Length: 124
Image 1 (tube, helix red, strand yellow):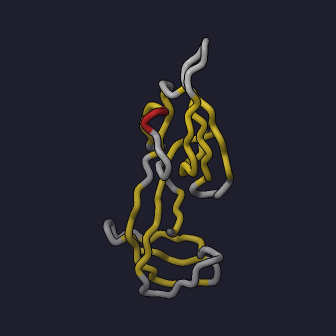
Image 2 (cartoon, one colour):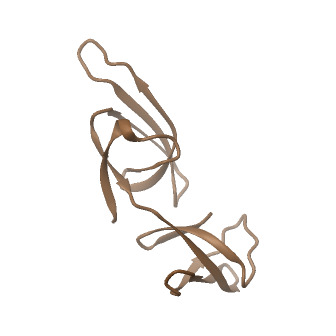
Image 3 (cartoon, rainbow, N blue to C red):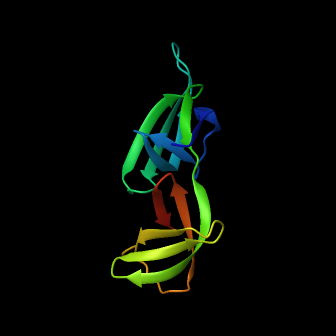
């Protein structure tokens, strides 16, 4: 998995973070002031990028955390067959089979934008 380390204090809403080995997009980020015997804590509420499940995390702000490297790519739909579609990556011209999202209406020759991390992909 392509990932890098980053301090918790450098995260912000809209960025990505790994929680429970799952890539998540941060919905809310809040910090609590340092107490008498401890350091400041950050509370992160996030939603899974590929599975859409809510997750939360509480860490000291100076702790290191893993951040996934998610690529945003352009593609063109080649064909649609039931719940599956063939998408050609416009950068590498590789053809990928993806699931048609339930809330999207797609047709051949349509240009789309999708997120890719290893073998996981999602249309945005």
